[in-house]
Image 1 (cartoon, rainbow over the protein chains, first blue to last red):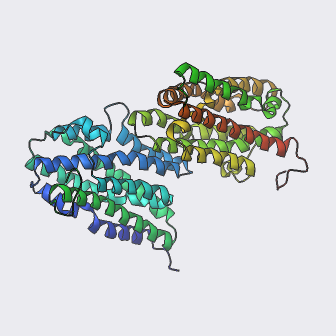
Image 2: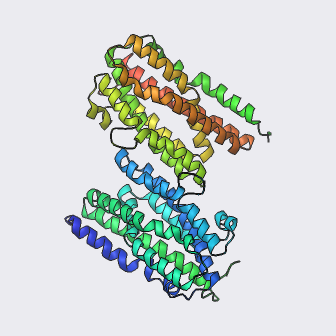
Image 3: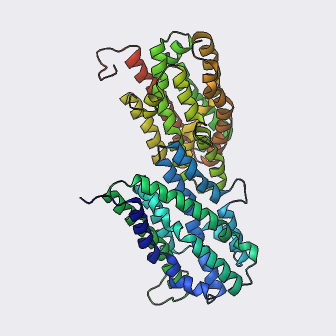
Length: 240
Length: 240
């Protein structure tokens, strides 16, 4: 039975495990940021990633339902508003659909999610399952990839402006809006995890939940890579 | 295979089944409204009912997580705000704790839920389970007891002002706040149920969910009645 880590040790551990597994290192992102994606490849990333986006308010509502504390719920409910908006056409999901139009996709096609790759669907549904099945503190820990999101978003905006100038600047609003929000959300979440993961066993489970989350994000890109950049003999199905 | 009922027929069916099973007919409410509850009996209703109140934002977050539609979620999320409030001390749960103080209970004792009767807990947890296990439209249908809530709240306010004048008027704010909100919420919910229960089978399941919900509310009062008004040989446990 190990002693629990200190707050600082736990945060350092989470950062260490999350950082080198974060999908900013994935080769799909490397190609994107180097301006080497074709229009189709950029589109398919936007289309498939939209399914992930649609899972976010759902998993956040599950997290909300796991808390007995109105103060926690008041903090977490903002995330749902961020994605759903206050009215039709507002919020992160609507911004993502504008981005989809900006890269030349049909809005309804993207919104229907009917062309999402099966493996992308498995991974994103796996995220919702993870949040449903694990404890509240582990579910919150799985959100801590947001630690690393602001840097990725900032680099993405610069790369898109430089390499894909045919995507108009105001289509990038989703990425811009996420930079301060991801920072705020990550700080709230890490504070919660540090206060509630009070045993070494629970701390380890929080790290495991974060690692699983990085695998989900990574697998999404693996699937899009396999289908649209390197579709070999192992890839089958209508969109390969 | 029956044809689906029309919107009007379905609403009439739901109203009919809900109305005569609604807990305003329960003898605990009859005693309450006739001014025949002792202080202890009024207090124990407030204390036990608080556990039900705490389940509301949780079941509403589960309902939120079942929807794929941002527009539905924007409508439903208001319910969570209604109970949790925008800040510490606001919202329906905080108002209920003020009511608890108003009837002479210890706020922390009530908030801890440690003295809630076992059967009350079973029934309220059963409500959360029902919402988790059934489809979205059935979960929404189970909320339709709100059809009947405004009348009950209005009668309750008058009865308390008349029969329990030692409870100061401003402690009744929760009941006052619920009258317009329950009306709005019930209208939103019935509209959703009428649009989404598109087969007779689904319509029947919605009616069944509403009936189960009336059983939950009824059982809560049965338990409080058994423990505090008619504690006989069949009632055991520390609070009987």
